[in-house]
Amino acid sequence: DIFKPSCTFSSCHGTENPAFGLDLESVDGLHSRLINHASQSSSEKSFLVPGKPEESWLFDTLSKCNPGEGVSKMPKSSPSLLEAGQVAMIRDWIKAGAKNN
Image (cartoon, rainbow, N blue to C red; front, side, top):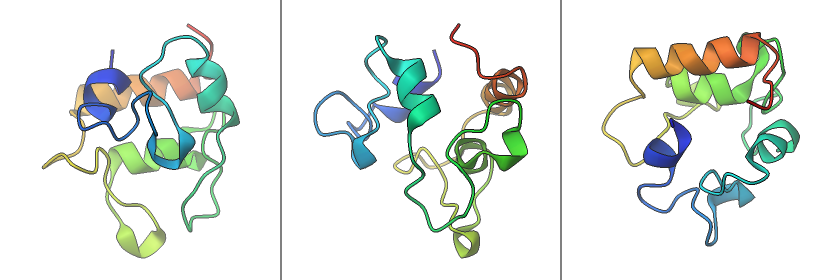
């Protein structure tokens, strides 16, 4: 509900040639792709650390913009970050262990 409209609208993370190899459009295998994806940034944070949103690059990139620390805003083509409620849902999901639900 969050990734598809927010991350695939300009084909960035769609099924065809997804940016950094991260397809966020296909539902099948999405959880595995998120859990196993390697961070492509200069940050030393892992892409997704179940139970630890503050240690997850995914949460950083969706919740703040700090290019000096290797965190550029996402969605990149959007004029703003995701809505606060969407960011909170992702944070809560990661904090709860990033379960396949």
